[in-house]
Length: 372
Ligand code: NAD
Ligand code: IPM
Ligand code: MN
Image 1 (tube, rainbow, N blue to C red):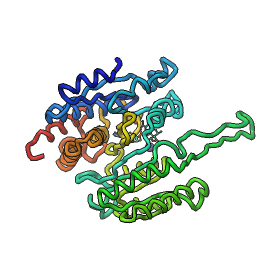
Image 2 (image 1 turned 180 degrees about the vertical axis):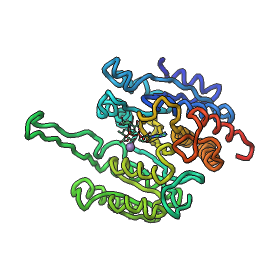
Image 3 (image 1 turned 60 degrees about the vertical axis):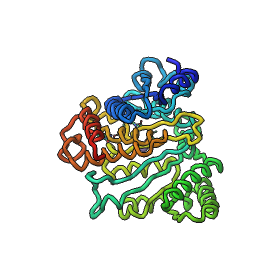
Image 4 (image 1 turned 45 degrees about the horizontal axis):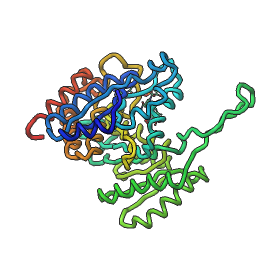
């Protein structure tokens, strides 16, 4: 179905309506996205402030096996008029990962210039943490990952294929514009929230790309002189994520480092089942995309036990981006209550026996309690 600008305008006359394109994708994607949709639909209805309309797209690895492509050629044109994309997970055994991810997730991130990947690493009360002597207040950071270039630009070549001297070249793409815009976003966030900003790079070994990154960070530090800044090499930063996570507040880093560090962040802040990410085009020239950061988890797909809290948290990020920050905060608070009460948890948490589909229902019950 085509979503035209005229239809959007018409619907907004009655009630502001957010049109969400849903790509549930592969494996546990559809299972966790169903819960997020339930929560978002309830928040919209109960708030009375806006409506949401979901349009599901059957794109992903199964679609690839039938059609030879992860999504149709004109997918970005189809998605362009939506207010947001809500994505489950992509990638499944049977389709090479570089084909599935390159043909869908990365195509959307790059095609819609979603150059900010915002990933909270926040230990909620009640969430399991493998670190000793760490309190929730000690892990409360937001990672701003560059999301449009770097090592993910897929610039490179394969030479002498199939011969003994076969060569692969993978070029990191670091532009001044690309570095500056993600850093400005992070500096503004740190300034607004009165937090410190840490840049994580690797200028000691990557003498071109990361040296440019470090130079631009230094230039901008002078411009945003009210923001307390720190710089760390990525190896040392990984160590500090584990040994002393309280030193991080806002973090800005490159595409690859941000990918790896946020899985580490997930591990210290409750696990992959809780880690959410927003792919933002801050100028709103294109739709932004909201997703759990985990993959399709083939090992548990179809069992109905996947943890959908990351997908629910990404709904909170969507609400925030739409301008309903208080409602977004309410959703995160509901997740925290669920974790503290420990009555309805999936098996990835100690003692959890609930099904995926119980979680959305439990979150809705908590949201409807008066005190929240
Ligand atoms: P994964 O995140 O799918 O799984 C890693 C481990 O975490 C598995 O043991 C899995 O069971 C567990 N896990 C992940 N999410 C969970 C949840 N919500 N609840 C409970 N347990 C959960 O990572 P992987 O195994 O490296 O990748 C599997 C596939 O997903 C690959 O094809 C990969 O390329 C793809 N992938 C896609 C995305 C995405 O679409 N955003 C992200 C990462 C990986
Ligand atoms: C993520 C994922 C993706 C990434 C993959 C699947 C391409 O790991 O969102 O963290 O590396 O960006
Ligand atoms: Mn990742």
